[in-house]
Image 1 (cartoon, rainbow, N blue to C red):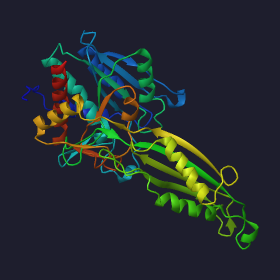
Image 2: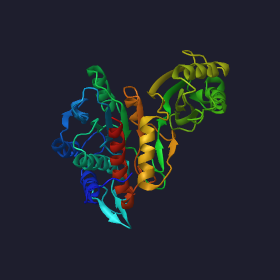
Image 3: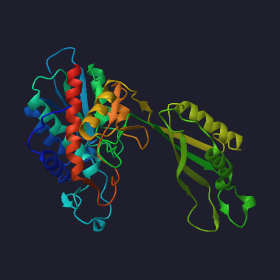
Image 4: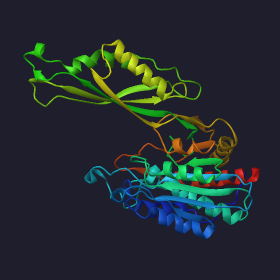
Length: 396
């Protein structure tokens, strides 16, 4: 599908540089959203700040929509986040992480891959598309936040709930997460696993290590149960998801002294679960395994749960087909569908939008020192977003 693209091949690069130059460590937006709104407003987008959270950690959110005038128009949403993770040791960076820098055909800076390049590509794709198709058959929207890399309590989830209460229709959503592996477009995420964390506090009796008969070691108490939990096969996965996994992330116990039996041990763990399991089912099985290994709720342990997100899946349909076609037309790649990796704000959007996928540049350097993106991967991403807009608009 040949599309006449605009003549400026550096528009996305320049906007990505401008976004990287704005320090925006969670939950600080650093002025990125006003810059994006400034670009969207002349295109006919109505931009609405939907900030949330306490004053000391205020989260910036932007909902922007351009309506085509049809009451029955379908809505394509571009979603993403302006916040980035902390830089780490500044001395370890070859260049300032908030000064966009070019070396060896790469653009360096915090957020270059995750995900300011995607945001720039989305904006420029809309500029190009609307210049060529000023009266599209679809509504186009942006849902952006500065609270994705952090707690994610006052960002996308808040905006989605507000949109649900308004009755705002959402049909398709593209999240700009860096999903590619070697080249832009070689992998997209059409779903994500659920995430659920648990904190297990096993209660013993503190004492002198030379007199174990006068104490009760909670680490020893927990050990058989931990071995059973680690060995458990939670499910076999399915055609779309790998098997559910259970992993310990932290263990805290002891006073720091080598001659004291601790009074408690705290074990943090996490499930990444497929659609074959549910939070309730996994919680019940954990309790059963603890009981089978000698631990009794209340008397021997306390357990708290946090469900970070449910799994979601977008099967083959209008959006996946359009994105696959756009990638093939632009790059010649037959893209791979995947549900691996961590969580994203797609888990919140999937609750109000039936078709959600994630597509962005290669992710090899995300969250790392010297995060970067190949310059050669930037423009194809813009064109893929543009082609997807055109394909969906053509279907009306």
